[in-house]
Structures are given as C-alpha cells and as structure tokens.
Image (cartoon, rainbow, N blue to C red):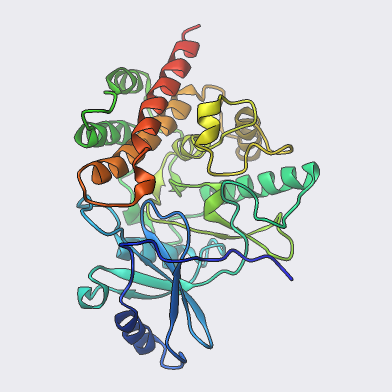
Length: 355
C-alpha cells in the first residue's frame, strides 16, 4: 500500500469550530456527506493547515495562526489568489476551491484547497520509505528542479505583475528584514547589528533577475508521489511568494540545507533530510542551480548570509509572540537559542569571506 502523509491531533489552542467549518464547506459543496473529522498537519509555525475529512471527500483548510499577528502577515486571500493564478502555469500548485473572508465562521480569513495525497519529506524520510543513495540523489535533483522551474514561469502571462515592485528587491529585503528584526528583538536575543551592517554594505548593486519566487522553498513544502516517491507532485505553502531576485530565493532555501558534515548545533535544527547519503551538499546544489539556469552564482556568500539572517528574523518573530504570551505553543520556547546561533553562523561566513 502506498505511503501517504498523515495528519494528527490538533494542537491545544489551535482547534477549529467544526460546525462553523462544516456550514461553510457544505455551502461551497452541497454534495459533502456526513460530519467532518478535522485533524492537523504537523509544522505550522506560520499558517496552520488542517485536513477536513468527509465521508466522500478530503479537503485541506488553511488559516492564520491564533494570537497577535503582524499587520501585513498571513494574508489568506493573497496566498489563494497567487495559487489560483499560478496553477495553469505551474501544475504542482494545489487547486484552490474557496476563500472565506467572513470572520464569523472561524474568526479569521481562511481558504480551502484540494488535498494532494502523497509523501512530505520532513526532518527525516517517512517510515517505510527506504531509498538507496542513487535514488536519494534523484529525489534531491527533482526537488531542486521544481525551484528552477518556478523561476522560469512567465509571471506576466500568469497575471502576477502586481506581486512585486520591480528592480530594487535586494535593497528592499535587507532594509525590511533588518527593521523587522529590530522590532522583534527581545532582551535575551543578540543584536545582529554587525550582520545587518555587512549585508547593507555588501549587497549587489542590482538584482540578478526578476522571477516568481516561492520564498520558503524546502523539502517539507513538497509532496512526493506515493507510487514513485522520488518524483514531486506538489509544492505547498505559497504565503510568501512574490516577484523578486531568484538568488535570494536560493539563499533562503539553502538556509535550511543542513548537510552531513555540519556542526552539531545546526544538525539539531535540521527539518529536512538533506543530511542523507546521496543528497547534494550546499555547494553542489549551488553548482547544479547555476548549470541548469545559466545564472552566475560564483559569489554566493551574500545570499547565504541573507538566507540565514532572514531565517533568524522569522524564528525571532515567532519567539517574540511566545515570549509575550501571544501564543502558547511550547515548541517555540527554545527558538531564542536558534536566533542566537544563527548570528554566529552568519559571522563565521562573513569572517571566511574576508580570508
């Protein structure tokens, strides 16, 4: 029997009103039968994802996190619009079925999409999936290919011109993420000031290109074919997709790319199986991306440091919510240590770049 990623119990404090969800979903699709069983997919430090199982259909519901949220974050309508526009041009996007902007149902905006039944490679490959080194390498290349294919999408034909502001993406990101870090810093967090100063001083003078970028492209945001699990059949989590510099997107992805010879602290942070024999190293992934796209990526240090810094800001923003009692998820308690470690990792890359 093919392996399929499964949802589990809903985390305390993140429960949905089943009757309200059922009322909306049956208005969307009157053929739905029975009372839904609602479970939750793992992960979800940002938007929350639930499996809604009826007698005759499975649906996936996505909503923002509970508690205080940044004003511009977690825009469900935006994410759904991107997916709907992109689907004809990039078939790995799940089909969006409905968007609910009426807060009376679940207390927030949310959307509903099809379920892509398959495997999601999270921290480790799913139990029962044993790949040899050659197949692991093929899986790795297939995942990278989906990022490369996304960067080749004709975003104008997809009607996504309004997603970005054009040239100057790199400068806007460095300024924006620096401002967000300063606002999210807690008294037990490092200041990152030397890293932010280095990024501002060493950013390229112009963007390498303008592409549709995912902005959170990781192994645990892809779905694998349960029959042929080295093949990718879905790409999830389009919350932060925009028009921007593809090398910034690559740097974001490599921030999660923990390889077998990394230090123990970084390996404890691992949330995707890039440590396995057969997986490309970060440098091999960079070289593969360059060969497939023809883009010049020989000076990748800036993008690597940017990716790590941006990850630190995201982690710190989540920790800030926990620190101030705006969320109670105990998994976020230790995020402060990740923030502080990532500054050290950035500083080591900066020091190495000067040698």
